[in-house]
Length: 327
Ligand code: PMV
Image (cartoon, rainbow, N blue to C red; front, side, top):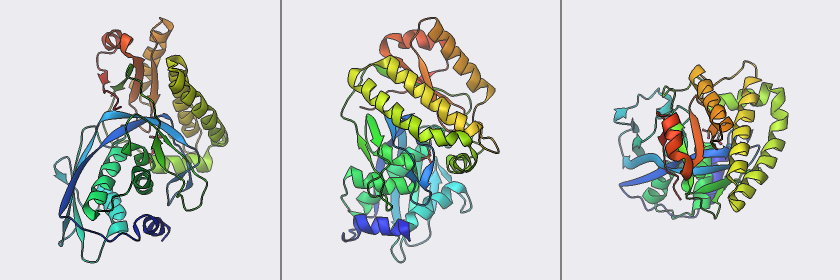
């Protein structure tokens, strides 16, 4: 009931003005300071704040009402009612269900699904935008980010462009755990995807986070590191210090993976190709090219560089797919 109470808090007094359907796009976001570990698993309340960069790819979703039964279509394929995508989507939609009302969700991801490329963040953010439109709530982004957080933590950051900070909050009901945009732009900043494998990951982030929290002795140090890293990245954004931004983001990502590696059983998202790409980045850096990486719950790397080095980097890493940030 605690999730329902949150929704009640945000939309309780609003009379639903139901439309037949709504369509929205939401972008993916890549965390530069990661969210890893929850203080409340039901409400997706994080142990730490986090900070991300929004990219120009994402998810297009159409949400329609029906009086038959729920239907979820992902990239043109109807999902069976036992699939993870179907159950996760419908369980979230249950929070907004009126008697006799069912939903048809038709969603298209511009990025591979479930491969650590943030498709659940853009997917649930797009769904929340559709819900706001369909029910005529007219909530502001901060309120929508709280609703998106209930579906997937990182989705709270996909309601905004540019750099975004998700504040961890301290309240039990999570009403102070929302994302907001950081008022700064950085047009010279480039991010590329080094996709080494687009398969669905072997363990999802929810289960991996929980396992880390429960069994990794290194995790105790994680909240303190995140607090320091957030200060450094905020400073880097203010002063446009790319070295500070890159170093801090890379270190933050590797530290997150170190907490996973030290859990029992160990969680390892790296593939041999991921490690090869990391070594390549380090070698390029040694040779004087300013390039850094970050990595999420999947084997693919996201590479950071400045516009002036983009062409050189593309030659060194021909498979790198640049995705412009969305400012
Ligand atoms: O929101 P989730 O449950 O998909 O978790 C996201 C976790 C990371 O991508 C690894 C880090 C982050 O902050 O996005």
